Length: 199
Ligand SMILES: [Mg+2]
Image 1: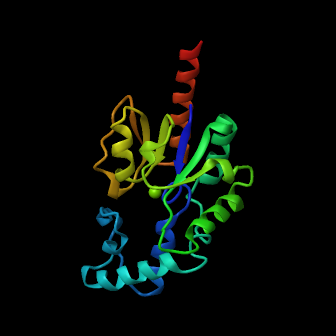
Image 2: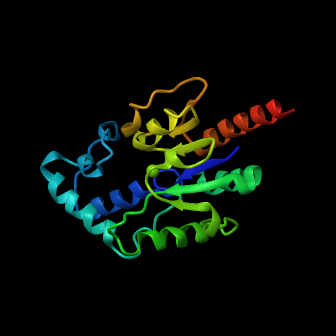
């Protein structure tokens, strides 16, 4: 079973990096229940939205930002476990901020720093249309990626956020996970099902 794991919002805590900068700049964050847009500048008071968008643009281009991102809670332990389970069938699929000269390189460095066992040269894939990749399962937080992927009849795990509630669960193919522990359990179940079908 070949699996693709997204980076931002799944392995790396992109939003925490941006929200930390928002707090430094003194923006007023709305309560998390209002974080329904993927555009993070909409997570502050409407009167501050334009200034927040400028901060986001500056941050995306700032050298060192992408490499400085923290791990999503549980990602360190459970991505390592996934690697033990799947080995060469585990891939990372991510879309760099192409207008940043350093983002793609920093993403490579980030993966090497946190997951030294992972072969970035053969298993880190960069590009937008993930549905075109030849794999069985996508783990992602973006409706924009999950919806076209699931439309091809393959399984997906949507990592739960306010902004991806439009993705509907489906008992057999689209699963929603609240944590890395849950992600690992779902992958384990799918993996065992596949092994049993092979017998
Ligand atoms: Mg993502």
